[in-house]
Length: 121
Image 1: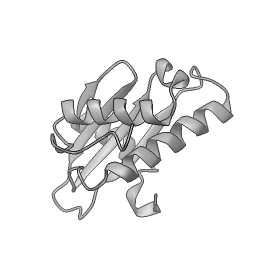
Image 2 (image 1 turned 180 degrees about the vertical axis):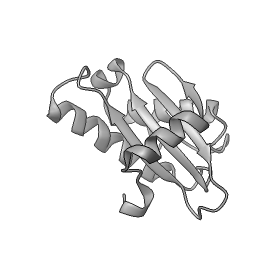
Image 3 (image 1 turned 90 degrees about the vertical axis):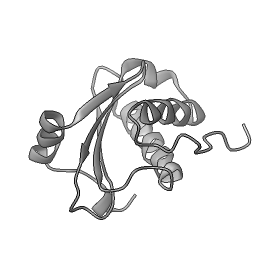
Image 4 (image 1 turned 45 degrees about the horizontal axis):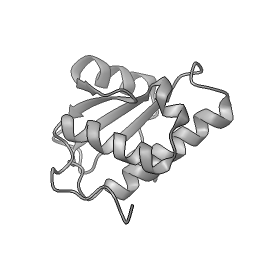
């Protein structure tokens, strides 16, 4: 995912936490902040050290980025998203991560309800 689609700075994370609204399921917490002036969405990821070693955390972040990349057509634009992975995410493969992320994004009402999640699975 390109750099213009990422949230990197701490103050940007804090703004989303303070002003955004949160939705959660067992594996992920998603904070959503609407930004009218922004042409596309941006994603910030947070995976705690409690989840595992660096290899495990980076794998989870790769899975989340790829899942968001595959769902970008159905995702609401002009929003900032901060996705926090919870401990059960460590035992999931890519398809489970994508399905769970789609579930929580639909709960947050930012992913199109009719958007197909399972591609041949």
